[in-house]
Image 1 (cartoon, rainbow, N blue to C red):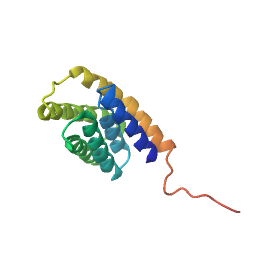
Image 2 (cartoon, rainbow, N blue to C red):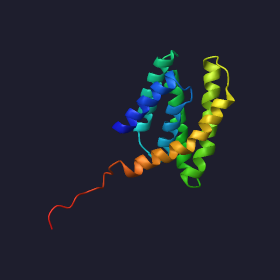
Image 3 (cartoon, rainbow, N blue to C red):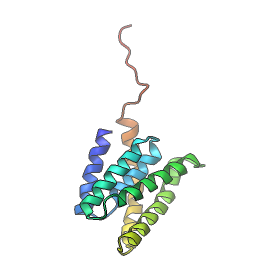
Length: 149
């Protein structure tokens, strides 16, 4: 959990300063598909607040958007008919369009389709990296060491 928090913190500062692609949202969508955990809601809330603060937006507005997206991902995950990586691309694309429309409506910004294309292309690599991290680098609760005979 600490590594995910540090990565999201780095991506928040990267998104707020250099690259306007919604990297935090992409990681939250992919982590919500892979890990069924309440920590996803906390991560969405905290990093939505931090990103709102860094971008100068009304405090809590991005938290509401991120919480809505994480909630929709958990609902879609429970009713999915196929494997997660086949359905993550269209659902993430729909959620990214929804997030861009909400941002353009609330904050009077223009809808940029090129950013949407870049974000869509980044969905699968971020999904695979989050999958690798969650499967290989996190300890599971049922892991026990044998000591002795």
